[in-house]
Length: 594
View 1 (cartoon, rainbow, N blue to C red):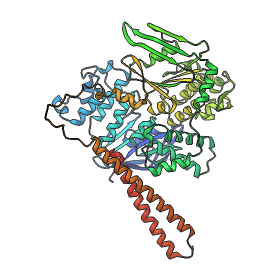
View 2 (view 1 turned 120 degrees about the horizontal axis):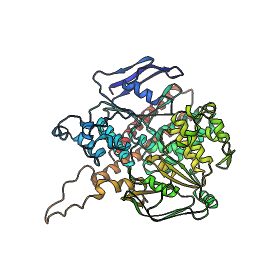
View 3 (view 1 turned 60 degrees about the horizontal axis):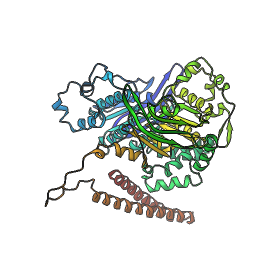
View 4 (view 1 turned 90 degrees about the vertical axis):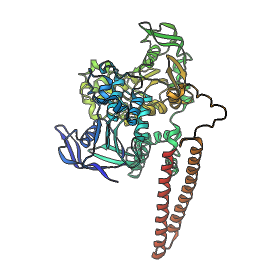
């Protein structure tokens, strides 16, 4: 595959730290790279250097002649006075851009609810992000470099973006580099993962799930002393296998390796025990909404909402931006009063809210972190063990040296960790998380989910992070047209309900004697064929794996002095491994088609 761009001996240094030292890597045609790492380790800096936005202190970035690189950074550079149409297609005539199917697809996918004449300055943060994305994706690029593209996007927009990026280029053409904390999105679009850590970049094959597995295996083989971190990763991996159905569409040989690794790992949480503990802390009554509604300036946001929040319930609330999710949580937290209906709350309910702002830290900016912790509870029970606030903060990925820093000197991610800790230490029995993934890296999210697994209370989550929703909650609801609707099918059901097809009128009946239109490649017959081929390939992989195991057994039992016999067995092994690799490629091709 042809080389598009790369780095040779990259060194990046600032007055206070060295970010990268002697990093060499390349991006070829067909690369789909997800970039992960802790906040502050240099993910955005790496993307900026590769895209030509940031000059390294030493080393060089190579780029094939004529390669076009499109960049989406975290900043908002849109002109407030421009219209949506001007921001996306500039002064290109309508008949020109409307004649381009790819541009029409981007506009329909991201801007269907926005008028082209709408002034950018009147848009919300999520709408502005969609406009910026549409402006980038409407162009023709050989390489797309995206820095946190899912920020401020709702579940529907994230799902559309993943589908667009997977179909944007043909196989083995174009390249994608994406920095994101959205683990579902990583699993959807990335075939390679780069972990940025300790001044270097370490590559892994596959998306987030495969990267997680590789990290566990790396730690196990190296006999790492980080036993707690390893167990945490194995626990999350267990959920990846047992949880969302999408995670199971992996090659069977990888599934079997994962199964062996997690054979002794229990389920992420004991639901029965957690409900029992939550009931003991809360009683049977938590919060009941009966026909509740909220209106602002005569405009109804919510109406006729009936919802009984039970002790130990773990629920996510989905919906597009502006649907009223935060308003619903406000009814539960008593920060919003209903304009109709009733809200009843149990006498023992203590609500803790982790919102999108860091307002509670504003009065602590000059305080040392250790002094802030000294004013809180002396211990916190996690999984049957009592942890001090410092131990809990360390479990959330907070380095011990930062305990001597002032709150105002912490990075956004570090402040978010401290905010999470303070909310937990306040002792709530109902915890509300409103977009908790802002400014949080994947390791922090994993640690937070692990804490929530053993937290005995009622959990209510609003998030566009699909991975978090599926990982941390057991039940999902959606706000659709101002009312609350249960989603037995989870996020997939929500996306079906929100898709244009679900609200389309039924197709007209065919005239008498006419025949139905010809089937397309996505017809059920075509899908059945692919599934049969996929099943046959999996059976062949099983036989190939058994053959390789048999060869290994024969080699182990063979006379070590018989060099000719061992050479024959080695050649047989190489042929079997080559055949297996071909079958694996075939499996992946069929999976892509399916």
